[in-house]
Image (cartoon, rainbow, N blue to C red; front, side, top):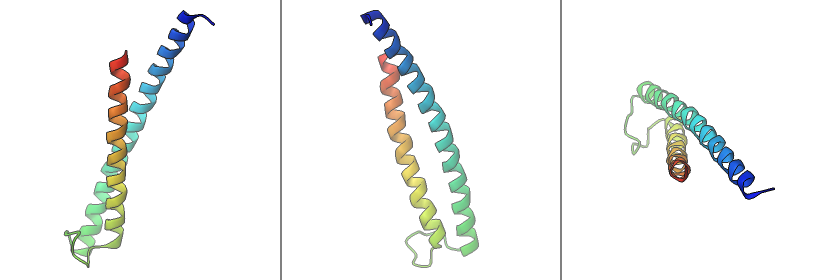
Amino acid sequence: MGAASQIGNSSITAIRDVLVIQTMLEDLQRSVRILDCDIATEEATGGINDAADPRYPLLARTLSRRRDNLKSTILALTERLGQLTSIR
């Protein structure tokens, strides 16, 4: 396989990776919005909005942790996307 062919394959792989990451980011952002709504619903149902309050709903606390983890993943993927797009 020639060097030109390898460069072409590398470029195709980078484009595919960009598209995959963009799709993943859209899905993760949608999930964060859904979790935000679910957390707000749990807080309204429990009547407690302060996560430091011991009476704060357990489900809201769990969903908040999940949302925060997704936000960390979004940040990491966004950084990776920036790296991939700066290469091209």
